[in-house]
Structures are given as structure tokens and as C-alpha cells.
Length: 118
Image 1 (cartoon, helix red, strand yellow):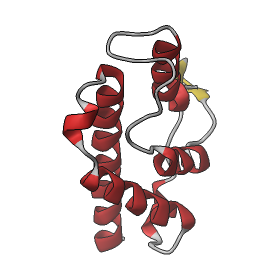
Image 2 (cartoon, helix red, strand yellow):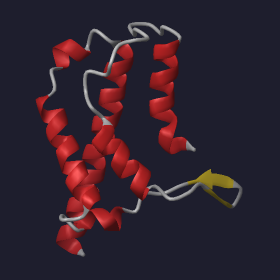
Image 3 (cartoon, rainbow, N blue to C red):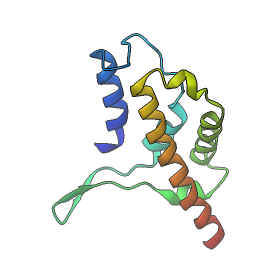
């Protein structure tokens, strides 16, 4: 399933000693809160008109008190305080950070819109 592709790519490249990565290194940023949200809210992959797809249950995040909404906010705080200079030394970790940051902030914008507009 697509939802785990980023983590798999990062893990595979680390294990194979990908450019800028070391196999034993721990990630500089803890992505576990975002992984929790994705694991809980991504629907199983299905096929619609011959196209494989899955979706995120945004409506769960509208409730600010839900475990998933709290986890997403914690992850956003983690991103806002991470040391980018330390991460830039690892191409794979830096790419994972940028992809996850884009995704979490894009989801956040949609959720904010849903909270304001129902």
C-alpha cells in the first residue's frame, strides 16, 4: 500500500547504505506521531474504475480532541523545532522530512477549512 511507501524507501535505502545514509543511524526527527495518524486514518486500498486508490479520513481530524488530531498537532510541533542543519547531512532523512512536512501541513489546511466551514 502507498501509505507506507515513504517509510519503506527510507528504510530500504538506509539498509543498503543509500547516498547520505548510514544503516545504523536513527532518524534525526521522530516521525512516529505522523505514522500513527496515517496508520489510523488511511482507508484500505481499493480499486475504482481500474485505478488503485486509498483515502485519508479527514473528518476524524476535525475533532481537535481526537487522538489522531492531537498526534498530528504534536508532529507539527516536532517539525517546527527540528534542527534542519543536522538533518541536511542525511539526504534520505531530509527528503523524508520535507515530504512529511508538506503532507502534514497540507492535511492541516484542509482540516482547518473543514472546522470553519463544516
